[in-house]
Length: 406
Image (cartoon, rainbow, N blue to C red; front, side, top):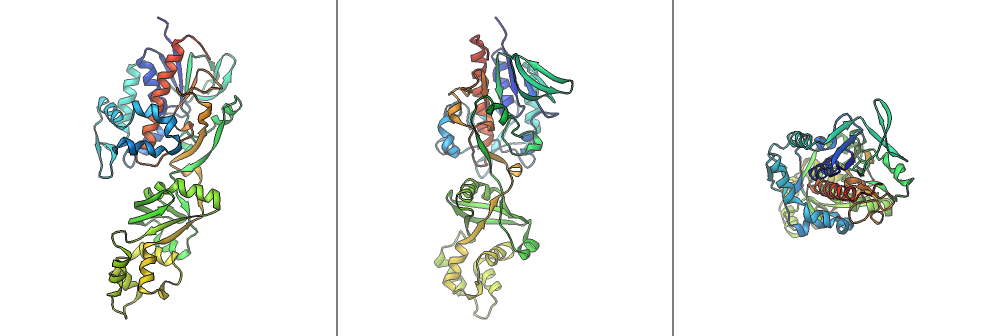
């Protein structure tokens, strides 16, 4: 039996999963990584607790991928949250479901998982070559810039898992885009996803509240009504609640020039109840005291109300209650793509076959954030990277086993 040779370019979750799948089926696999080590973005994501997937019902889970749900469906059907948790367990990494439904390793960090995974890949015979930057195609193979100079190597099939354009310092710099475009692959422009937004705060707001968290609020946009927390920064807003609305806000900014996020600063009370509570406060009390005692607002929440609602002191009790329940945050623009957690955009789906092979480049498969999809934070990003990497790795060895070369 002839051993097939598979190249996996990119040492993130999608690439390493592709390598594992191909190696399990008897292929000789070489992983090429431009950075000095693999899994850098995974390790960075795990610094504050590696949210590897989400435990919500599959019917809701799959909708988180929006317009890309259909092309991702087959990969998710065979490798979603339960399978990913089982895979972690096989590596000796136990997981648990947090109060929000997010799934984490019990150790919280990514390093034990990555270490166990790399040990298994080595045991499977997977070769990892770091500081090997893929630069394109030659007539007789793939070209790489290496510490020893440029080299050309030939493979029976190739999986590209080079990431998108966010966090370029960790390796996802989108340098592959012109290489593929020259070969006829259509790539939709990358846009920031799960990102912060600039607000144009007053100097008072910046000086008093930059860096402070805003807890227990509900925000509304075209994405829906979502409760959570965010952080005020010197330039605007960021955090999990903002990320949940980021796609809707980004699209609105692109369409209209600005976007609005509406905040309910007292989500546990109706407008009527809030108006009653405010009316009970002494008429001679200051506005700050009335808001603190009647609405539970002080600190950064009171700062947001003053910043975003003009002529606050002139409002009646009823209109003040309405204002507290509908504070308009006008966002100007998303933060730069290099700061975004993830991206929208990438290789257009009509250029990819159902097995993640590029139609313009037979024998070349793609996985992870190179593809045109986005999802909110909460474990959905990593799950799709693992799922597409698994599918691409299996498809690559199947293609190579057919004897046809790129």
